[in-house]
Amino acid sequence: MRMTLGVVGLSVALLVCLSVSSSLPAQPAPATAGGTSGGVKHTFVCGDYTGSVVKIISAEGKVTWEYPARNVCDLGVMPNGNFLFTTGQGVKEVTRDKKVVFSYETPSGSEVFTCQRLADGNTLVGLCTDKKLVEVTPMGEVVREIKLTIGGSAGHTNFRRARKLDDGTYVVAQMSENKVCQYDATGKVLRTIDSPAVFFALPLPKGNLLLSCADTDANGSKVYEVDPAGKTVWEVKNGDLAGITLRFMAGTVRLANGNTLMCNWLGHGHLGEGPHLIEVTPEKKVVWTYADHTAVKTISCAELLDGEEK
Image (tube, rainbow, N blue to C red; front, side, top):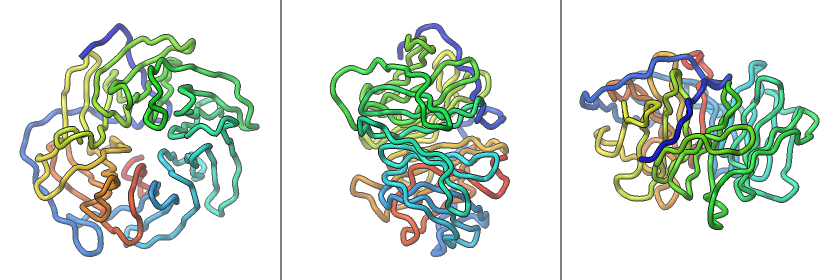
């Protein structure tokens, strides 16, 4: 692991919660035919990357809302209840009655895997193919551009999700280079953390990061938390959850109750194999899974809508 100086701040969109560490054994709860387990039920919104659609799934497992979104990879629930999500080569904000109130399409046609509504009302958009971040006004005007230091010509895997922090810096999951980088507003790299096939680096309080890693090999799929010094303080990896195989670990959310919601993307030859969503306690006890393969194909991102994450 290599690191330079820099401290991760807390993003305006982040949830306040405690970071914890544990080595206790997992206590899994198998998924039922209805798609949930453990007696816990959640209403949630999710991005089905393979199905190219955003859906709300009720606590009863019913699809109650949907909107097309090609290769949706990132989404957020706005304070007014609207949804902000990526659409393949752009970003949209859509109301519950399906009115588009914000839309941005990349002029270059770059793939887009990141969107974040900022405190000033602008939107952070990650242009993967173009290796840069842009901040876009509600009128669609680009007012800031941050060029990323990404070598080679990986294209599709240059980076996945990025977040702007309260201190004005940016954390970027540079998948093709197996590392997380923190940039200042000029594009200078302030900190680097090695992380194989990293999909997302979610900033947590006190500078910790919650990292999710893809399916590069049998042992690579995991979600883990590192402190500002880069030390792993908590992790869930293959073999920790009996009866559950971790595939491509995508979006993650640290809930207010201290649990972690993990998106287990089932692409790359594993459609229909295992749960899409897994909620685990700090002790790595599985308290809820969602595994309905009829309603959705693969989940890249999700947010709870029943108050658990507030």
